[in-house]
Image (cartoon, rainbow, N blue to C red):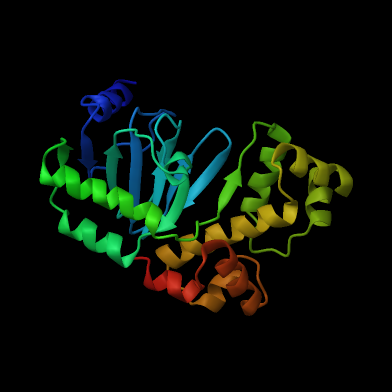
Length: 261
């Protein structure tokens, strides 16, 4: 809890400043929130942002915008992950800044981050750094980029968590609603209702997202080719894998590999 208090005090110490932090400060802290909004950029791996209702997956070369006062905690396992955090004073602005969202880091945003790569600490109104970072924030809502859409709903239902853990460990198999219902000792109808009432998502949608998340991890952490990755996560049709990957991530698996660094 001391680390959590130190972080919140550091972020909110100067209410009117923009704070730049490049350390992986928020990893594995309990759920918390700040008075400031947060721009969190991820490079070199996949980060996981947990909220009360969903787990958000942030792949390399993407950012997540977290509105002020939004409870969250950050998780990641990759050692070579690099994170940039910029905390902005909460201000009246467009609807874009009132919603949590994940987007790709554009070429323009990447250039602005490169320009400010040595900046660290608080920047106050009146300084040119403050004006530059304010402009950087303004760019986000003007780019009209498509949201990254992998958001896994969570539940405290122990039966369903046991089922989803089992699915997670068997992604390479030919899984179906029938086979999972048989494993869990439930009827197909009951299992279908459980997913819909507790997760507000279908079994097929949940399985698809789990498989694509695992594919992202394999693309990042291994040298397997796309055919091997498709088979490793339960796809026998490479085209279906590529299409589902694009549907959820807005890019083909081969594009994602090029952006993983």
